[in-house]
Each structure stands twice: as C-alpha cells, then as structure tokens.
Length: 221
Image (cartoon, rainbow, N blue to C red):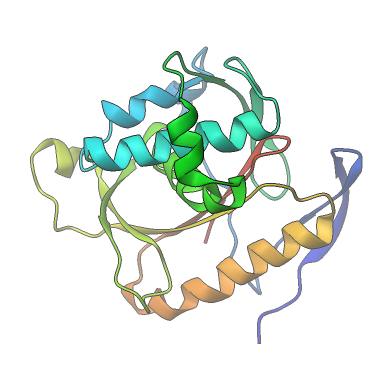
C-alpha cells in the first residue's frame, strides 16, 4: 500500500498544497530545461501539428479540437494563462495560444466536454514533455502496462531511432477540480497505476491537466 501524501503549509488557489514523501512515492522535483524557461512561456497548441515526431495529422486534429472544446467550455480564449506546477511550487506560467478556430461540427463530434477531456489532456502532455524535458513521446503503451505512453530521447528521435524506451508517461485530464482532495486522488491513482511498469527502471512522468483554472501538474518519479 502506498504511503499517504504529506500535507505541507504552502498554498495555491487559496488552498493548502501538498507533496509526496520521497520515501513513499519516490516523487522528485521536476528539473525543467533552463533554456526552455527563459522568455519561452508561450505554448502554441498548433504545434501539435508540427513539432511532435510521431504525432499524426489525424491524431493532432483530434487532440487540438478536444483542447479547444475543453478550454471554450470554461470561457478561455487564446492568451489564457496556465500554471505549470509540481506538487510543491509553480515551475512556469504558460500562455496558451492558438489561431485556428474549431467549428460547430467539432463541438458536435465531442458533445459535452467530459467526452473530450482525456484527448485534450493527452495533447497538452505531449507538448509539455517535448518542450520542457529531454524526452518526447515515441509510442502508445499496451493496455495493462500502467502508463499511457513510452518516451524516447529527443536526440534518438532526431536520428530516427524510435525503439529506445527511456521514459514513460501517464496522463490524466479533468474539467473541474475544486478541492485538494480531488487533486490528491488523481495523483494518487496515477502514481499507483504506474507501479505496474516499475520493472523497466526508466523515469516516469505524470501529467495532470485541470482545464477550469487551467493548471498543469508535472510530477516525476
């Protein structure tokens, strides 16, 4: 059974923050690439179509339309700001930007936002991992592996090497998380789920996006 999270006195959103105990979860502070932090807080959602090595145009279109459905639902427009956090602190403040609108058919295809939230979260996670870490997504994992995606080194992918699994990623998306207990449960679930592939010995990234704020949690174990 996993060790409970320790509640720390820090605050965010006007609520108490928390962090995982290293001795229990093995949760570490994410070290973002310094060159990614300097004056580069704009996150262009349309980079789903251009910057990700194995993202197909079809899949990029799905994630993009899902993202806008979720953001529009909460009245967010291009230029909306989102905190990128670990469990203790804000790592960066991002500005979501996009220019290509979605149409009524996109909205009808998704129906209500909860149908779109997981695909939207996947799109954000692909962009965040590619932008702020040394990894990029190379493959969707098999069901039962405990994670959603396998990550490869960017240098490997640049050299057309797609079979070296150097990391793993679990993605969660939520439309409205109002209380710390809800966030805790999402992180708890993700941490526990990823233990199924601990035998690989490679780093795990958990990316949780909550769209009403919006806020993104990036946790490494």
